[in-house]
Length: 368
Image (cartoon, rainbow, N blue to C red; front, side, top):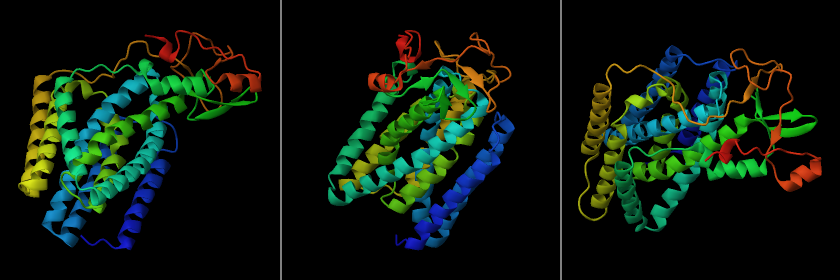
């Protein structure tokens, strides 16, 4: 597959333009409705599908099917991101008005990190062909573990990343609009929104470890790997707001994702030494597994209503708008005029700034 440099620049230009459009359309903080999320989800999916059509037209059916197989894998695995994001937002009690801004920068970071991972993976495959055996084994083991740990519990309070964040960065105990940093008593400190963003980025890096080898199992064309990832990731924000209150209904989806990972692991092993599974068959298998798991999930949970994910021990930070007033509907036991505390930061930071920073036992990772 011979892809000219201008095609890479054109794709990057389209991605930047789409991100700029998204940021412009959501420049004012507001809670994303299901209808708005559904509309944007349709827009992002249309872009992804249309790009696959361009690949099919320019390079033929084989590459077009490889792109669609990769896109479907990434889009399906993204549902796990949605579930974990819902837990993080619930734990930090992030107002829905501010969640889109976190996810916007989270997606930008995800595009950068995945680009790095894809370049690294391609370099490894080109120079060390045996690495494909490791990729295949990793996918098989990951799929098996996913089957065994379908009901695994996620507790953000035990996150080592969050613990390191608290020890390293001073943070004010209240939201200040959509800001990640604010000046508090003359000092530059983080807001809880920055901690949320860090966890969102780390979550995507962890999921990328699974998804990047999986997509290399269906295509070894770096251009297809990157574009399938990019167009799938661009729609993650809208997918989150569309599905966050429905993730409890996808009871069998994790089984489907596990089977997909195991299938592509087997396909990769067969491709190395035995038999190249046609992309048409691979795409059909992946589509069938995901479709059946979603249909079975929705059938098994008929009658269940939408509801937000609830996490025990969530942190009810006070919420202020950009002008400093307490946001309606987010009144806090501190009271509107009670000064916010600063928590966390290193001993050197506290000494240098003359801060007496509280680290209450009941805050963040102190529970559990």
